[in-house]
Length: 324
Ligand SMILES: Nc1nc2c(ncn2[C@@H]2O[C@H](COP(=O)(O)OP(=O)(O)OP(=O)(O)O)[C@@H](O)[C@H]2O)c(=O)[nH]1
Ligand SMILES: [Mg+2]
Image (tube, rainbow, N blue to C red):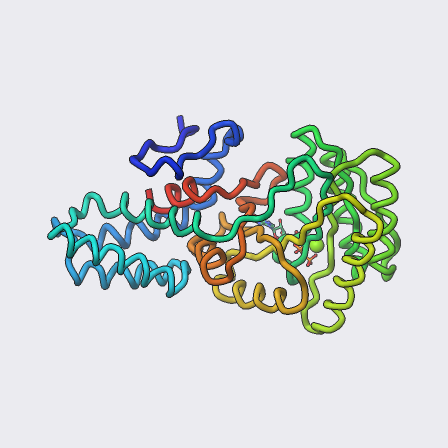
């Protein structure tokens, strides 16, 4: 049975509200982080082997391990520094406590990162952006499925009009999850598709719209204009709706994904990140770098190719699955 997170001594503010925990949450999160977790734990075990206390040499190994997990240099140095201070003030830190300390510190770090504005019950338009192949369309399907199962009425907008196959892919997902897809033909103006989608959503009483976009970043100006145009349509047509732009990053690309995020932040407002393909990489530490270095809230994690393979991001659970 693997449905509950391990119990650990954590500050009360790190406790995870049980009512938010979905069925299978912990299992999916663990599965998504398995490669990262295994690699980190193996390396940490090797670094502390034969030692009883955390000494300076262990701390140096640890620093390398943390950096190689893609949590970012800044976060790695800060974590190691905290442990160094522990070692000074308490004379000796037991190696058995090391992982517990790391879990706590990583969780605190993530809790300290910006959080997205609460949407309450407001109907929401989510513009989903990201470069080619990062997992936008699949993630939209997962989000739509998730919202649908919570009782929300969802509509998808096929605003990636660049390729006919992209529209077809979204339609297929729509059929599979039982959600309407608003589309025009290939080459149509993406903003016009979004306009149609908002009208349809209002007519059909939908309260969640997800907009699929094309992932071309090679021409920044084009992309900027396109996203700005979509944004104007949403602002004008979806009055009273909550608007957000969700950036999808491919976790397998590590530091490269962080650079993509910086690129997107230059051309559009980015409110939050969905970190996809966590299941296929040992670079799961990236979520920390996104929160810490980019100062962007991570909202969701993609942990597989199926419609159920999505988990909400929660700092304490993430830290526990990463290092606990
Ligand atoms: N393992 C795994 N694969 C994923 C995940 N998310 C997406 N994929 C796969 O990544 C590939 C690309 O996904 P898409 O959703 O088509 O990506 P996209 O960003 O829409 O791609 P473009 O529309 O071409 O820009 C597909 O084979 C997906 O099944 C994930 O969380 N885990
Ligand atoms: Mg796509």
